Length: 276
Image (cartoon, one colour):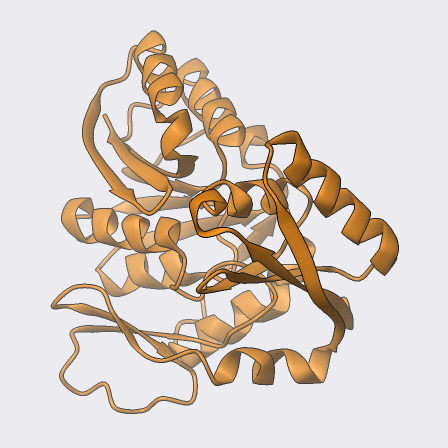
């Protein structure tokens, strides 16, 4: 597991912020926190000057004016503390609240989800995660088999299990999330019997699931959809990680594959779909 990361502080004009999360994600960002017009962006440790150059050039391609106003190297033991001050319980619905691991007051919540802030998206602060949770609550029925594609910290896996899923098959391509995933499962008393699979979820030979949730990006989402259609999997799918600006193209591609969009949500610059 990695022992340190780069933290970049990026100042962006208010009217140019929308595309920034997607751009830095494509550069390999593993976490982002927005505070007014300042983004705190985390990357796997690398040459600081080269990283700054990559960020600046990528933003310039979209005519985004940005200033890198600070940078730092975060050690493993400091990561949790970096998030602690700003991470408070997040009530999403009447049933679901996301808690940091140090929070204990959850007696009145049907589905408390405990997360130790780690080195990946999935603390519950990101719009894509929140929309996926809302759609899971609306559409997941008890005793069903779920595929969590791009599971990250495990937040959607944990939610599905607590909502009554028979089991959840959790997949991600990043081996660095293993420790954080397992830690979050233990925090929610769900470690035993659940395994994290590291690899490409489109390499599976069979897709015998009742519901699939895929919180990744547009192109990997479309590749997964193509694989499901080719394997004659008719399970409904929750897709998130798609920018609002990409939604029209995504809708067209979904229809081209013969699937139907039943529900669409938007939050910030992101959108989510429930596809049948």
